[in-house]
Image 1 (spheres, rainbow, N blue to C red):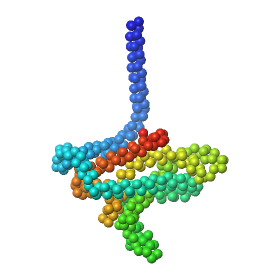
Image 2 (cartoon, rainbow, N blue to C red):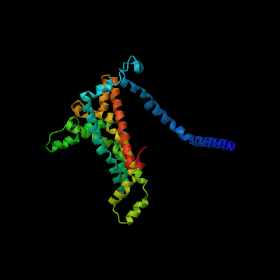
Image 3 (cartoon, one colour):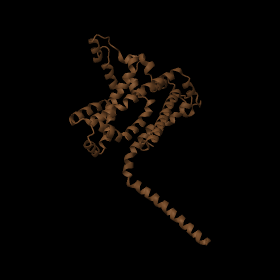
Image 4 (tube, rainbow, N blue to C red):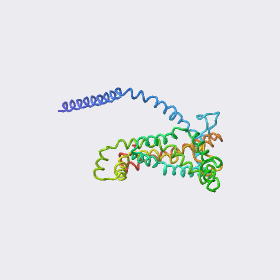
Length: 325
């Protein structure tokens, strides 16, 4: 009897080994069948490895007193001294406050803008008009902030800008919008929406295109209006895409657009316009305080990651199929 049990156990072990080997061969076979996809992915992998992951070793200088001649590895360790300095610097809190206010406004007004535009374009029945609007709205996305900032400064110029010409004709005094603390944050938010609204609309139009047309036909038979179809069919159908985009955008509340702010910032609006990325630039590259700048950058990225994970966890709790992971 004991011999039979041992034989049965050995047979199970052999069968289990064969099953594991078979599964392994199946996985390898699937990978081999898609080898050309992996080859196509290789340049993307190399790009992210070389330019995004390999330089991450430099984060260590946030915990060191970085000396240029000694390099990152031989500079002395100082622990959290730079983070302690960071939280005890009064101007850092001003910069953090500016970052949160500006990016909060961008998220509040900029995130729903492409959704609204996609819904409106979806209702346009004239294909030519629709294509013209889409083309015009896409163009700013492909221009750099250097070009766009020049256009904005000229457009809002107190001497040559058309807006100030209209104000002057109406009897008002010209306003130097870009150098006015009361207007600077609004300019940042408006130009951000202007640049990205058209391109981001593509994502929502693609999601709308995937909705089954029979749902609209059935709703039309039931006598539903176009506004009601938008509310009860279109919006719920693209809700997963909206949630995913919101999760991805949530980290931007502390990760500001350096190029935009840097090209529009001037000394008269530093108190309301200086944000974490421009502060990091001025500390790191202008004042050559590399370790302190690295500490600011690391703080910003850690907070952004925590925000994304938190929003993703909330989304998973509300609607499991809409979370990223």
